[in-house]
Structure formats: structure tokens, C-alpha cells
Length: 400
Image (cartoon, rainbow, N blue to C red; front, side, top):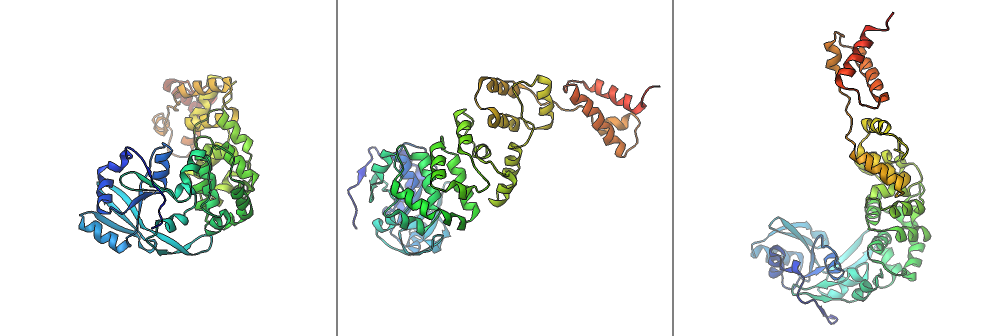
């Protein structure tokens, strides 16, 4: 095995001692933690999930774990992956692999027992790290140095890595948004620019998954600007995008919200984008609503704000103020006022109309709409008694 000298983390990261993971790695002592958990340990970021790799074949992994009394689910045997389940937690365990054939979307792999060969097929140097259960980190391609320098660098030749899987273009920007602190690798950018049109061949679900992660970074302004510079943004968002609008939103300290940021960035039709990227119904409806009217204004009095609250969700109205005005003091004051306001509720129902002698039928709805319009025009403050009085007046007809 051609292993480089290991970096020993002392004491070993605390997550390695968690009972469920310790039991799995204890049953598979040759396994290592790979990918994001190692990267995030070294960069002092929260660890969301733990994946393992092993030189054992999937069949051996299953036999070994079952012999240790652990439950095993064959979640992806064709790719060499099984999932060990303990205490309600699942750990994906994948046999070391090397690429046999790639086409930009899918790969044919063969199993191996060579950790360096497995690391060589990964996308970025800091994603090629692996860590033993006692906290030794193996680094085959300078990932630790790149992580410390804030550099996102492909393993080996960027063009080769990209043509193996074109989604790596967007993954580059996702990790750039999260970890980069210096100039981007010019060789990587040249390869991305040359291969950017191939993004159109990817499934839109994968594209939106990566784009939403980019927009979920604490501050993706530089990354989105870089995407525009190398021609990626116009392919991902052909409806039109303006990075300056995203910059304004982030500078205003708006909430970290990928859909809100997408609404700011987008200059084209949100309904068209939602259909093209196959957003969920909830995502589609919110994106369209974010770009719709009304938008509360700093000059609105309380009555005007109550009228808007009566017909629209408060959170949506607050989000629209971020898109419209940002952090200026008058907009901040508007959000404070709006957030403190209870949503007014029209106090009448159909039964109130029927109780006054109106027969069932379309006229009931007409009368309710008329009284509600009167209630809205008055600033949504009329009491139930006042609304009933107005209803009685409409039922009696104009006075003579």
C-alpha cells in the first residue's frame, strides 16, 4: 500500500468515539472515515454525516458486520455500498474503487484494496482525505494544505476530473462558496469554462440541488460572480440573472435562504425557471410569490400594512421587503413594525349572513365580499358588531 505519512489528530475527534460509529469501525478495523467528515473536522465545521470506506468486498463487509450483531442494508451493492444501522443511525460503507469507464454522467468501477487509487477518483483534494478510527488522516494529494489555504483544487488534471462527471463543475463552486479564501485555481477555471456547456446534459434535479447549496453558503457573492465570469451562471439560469441584486440582498444582512437569494438573483420569469428545474410545488409557489405584489413600503401606514397582512402571509411580506429595500434604516423600521403586527382576521362567516335571514345561494358570498371590502378599506379594525351592522345595512338595501 502506497500510503503517505499520516497526520495524527490528538486527541482523536470526539465523533469517532460515539458508540454507534465506534461499534461499526470496531467490527471493521481496516475501515476509514472518508469525504466530508474528514474535511469538516480539519476545518472545524459541523459534521453532518459520516461515511466509511474499506478494502473489503461488499460481501465480506456484510458478513463481518452481521457476525458482530449489526444490522446491514444493501443500499447500493452495484456500487459497492452497504449501510450499517445501529441505534437508529446509518453509516454508508463503500468498498474502495477505481474507475474503469466514465461518460460525464455515470462511471463503471472496479473494486480495489488500494486507498490511493480510490482517492485518485475523487473530485477535490480535500475530499480525498481518509481518517482511521484513532484519528490518523491520510492525504494523498495535498488536500490538507489546500484546505488551510482556502483553495479548491481538483485531484489531478481538472479537465479529466470534469469530463468524468460534469456535475463537478457545480460542486467546484459549492465548495468554493464554503471554503475558498483566495484566488481560484486558474487551471480549474479554464477547464470549467471549456466544459460549461455540458451542464445542459445533466438532470435538472442535480443542477438545482447544487445551485441551492451554493446559495445556502454564508456569503456566495464571490462564487456567483465567478460563475458569471466563466459562463456557468448563464447556463444554469438562462432565464437571466443579475449578481448585483444578490450582492445587495446579502449586504443588507438578509436571512440565509436559497430561495430568497434565487428570487433576488433571477431577472427572468420565475414560473418558467420553476418548471424547468422541476422545483417542488412549495418551492415553485414561494418563488413566484416572492416576486409578486404587493410589496410593503416604508411609507405605508398601519392601516395599509394591516390590509396586506389580511391577504398575505407575514413571512412572505417580510421577505419581499428584503428584495425591495434591503437594510436601509427605513426598511428595517418597516420590518419591525410589520413583524409586531398580528394578522387581522375578517370576523364574519357565511352563517352570519344566514342568521340574518338571507337564503343560501350566491348572494351569501356576494354580501360577505362586500362587507369584507368595507372592512379592508377601513384598515381591518371594524369589530364583529360593526361588520354585522354593515351586513344588516346591505341586506336592507339603500335607504329611501
